[in-house]
Length: 521
Ligand code: FAD
Ligand code: DLZ
Image (cartoon, rainbow, N blue to C red; front, top):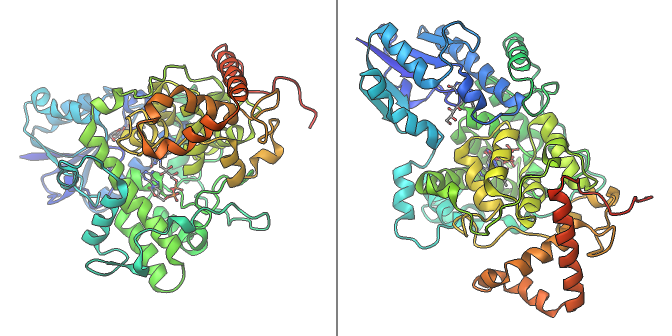
């Protein structure tokens, strides 16, 4: 009586619910590299290499503990190249009497998994994914009949429930739940963030990298700079490196951007968390210990824990609460195709060029680049949410729909009409100038709102506010920009809107954002 325990590529975790109660004498773990999962979006080459390498290492880890693993390699003869095909093949070959899985991270896989019982004729049990701190039932109960699902209130409940950064049942450490107002500084010129630890590819990863280069040559991105942790030990070392060297200033410079500084004080742990080799509880616990030991200030530690205990859990809850209708919403009726420069990085807009170039080379950009540069441009330019979502799913090593979709569709594009965020994260060039040094070396002039060298974020921002003025009039949080717009000289508004229209038409013709006349600066 063999139980087949299925472990997906982003489930490389010792404590996975599908492995609970495993009997090495009778059970077999199935792990399958399949083309369907590598191509349902054309993932960045580094993401595929990361997932396949993590899978191969995790299989070895299980085998070292005496677990029988049926591991199917991508280039193995007979591979059906789909998860369902491999489950069917394994169930038949092993005469499985039961199939055990952990709830997957994406809607489309959950739908498929529900059909595995009929496909194999073997009972399938799908267990909760207990690696998350908030179960889906608990999130549903929290959401209940609430009209507004604000992250901040969810986060406070999670602090109380876990006791993280608490002094008593209802007393947050430092007397405040949230220190975000301390976390908005730009990077001073004399501060150089410490470089994050890199993990040189070992033999397993190098083999996988060759496979990816051979099998997926046309996928976005380069493999050369691959330095991701691929085992639990590497991931722990990556976390430790962050806690020691970058956590103390993480909060202060969380929203900063800087030319030539792709990672600043960020943790670079999302890829490891999402593939399963790093436990979110361990990440939060390590940060809290640094605070209690006096090694990191509260604004940094609270900021980091909020991202994981708050945002990460919250977006997952929203995803499962609202799917599948969620991804089809398009509240701002945005329909413009994704411009080619999102792939090529060929634009004279320095902030976009930097974010896209590092995305291609590292499969990484930090939150503010994703939200306030590529996301903000997509929002202001009215890019089609489906195309933008696809782009974000493709380009990052940490991208999985449960986390990518609410962040992109909801937070960056406001396509959900305000489920995630009470107002759009829209900003003009002034914000980017305040938070970065990109504007200094840009071909556009951030101080100008019209004219050949005007920063496109400026005229696009005001065109966006004017375009949606009727809708935003119903939102008290949009009162300020609407008031400012109303006070502007109508001729200036008209000029900005005309320039925005010409710019967007040029974008649709495939022209990359460049100043109307060659600049000599
Ligand atoms: P840090 O800035 O060091 O933060 C620490 C951790 O907090 C992250 O590793 C992550 O696990 C968590 N976290 C922080 N912000 C968020 C958030 N908004 N939602 C969920 N978790 C968060 N994150 C992903 O993991 N996968 C995605 O596909 C993804 N797509 C995004 C798309 C857009 C448009 C935006 C605005 C954000 C997206 N994020 C995504 C959230 C965030 O940008 C990344 O988690 C973060 O940049 C990863 O880098 P880091 O590990 O250095 O994070
Ligand atoms: C992302 C990914 C990739 C690239 N490849 C595989 C694979 O070959 N086999 C596998 O089991 N999982 C893979 N994954 C992760 C899945 O896409 C992921 O489990 C689903 O998207 C659900 O989150």
